Image (cartoon, rainbow, N blue to C red; front, side):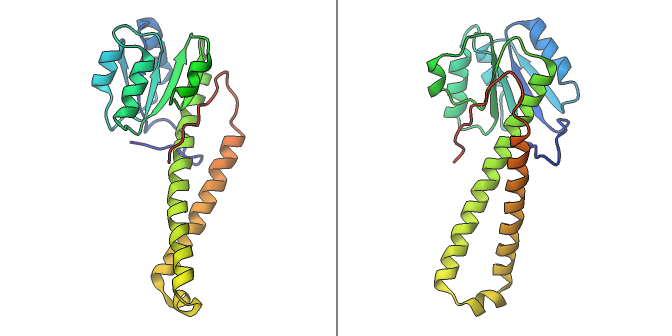
Length: 198
């Protein structure tokens, strides 16, 4: 499982599963992602659930699929608690049913090579932001507790506390960098579904 950050925007360490019943379109997506570490394709919903695993970073998911719809595939992915990002790429006109769908990004077909690649980067960058924020929040709570229960002198002399402070400063910088990257990368024809990662 790989996570892209603004400092490592290449896709060469990413594993992508393309779920698309149009074989020509699936082949085109695969060609567009030729520099990606691993690209697998599934042409129906059931096959996609057989292929997806813990090593999958991103699923590019069509909504209209034989055997099992893309919406149902998405539900199963979330039920399995897989940590992959799901990028819906569909010709279905967005409607209010999207409110309950736990996707990480949405592209309306037809899409371009640049739109697909940018959307993959955005979803992975968002995943990195959530993971970093979780760690920052956890360590911040520990720092607050220690501030309440220990003296300033004890904290100043403690090596573990110094490591905690250093890590918090590092994480704060990472969050600023990632947030700045997301603000400057809002382009594309799709809209992001920023699923809560807590």
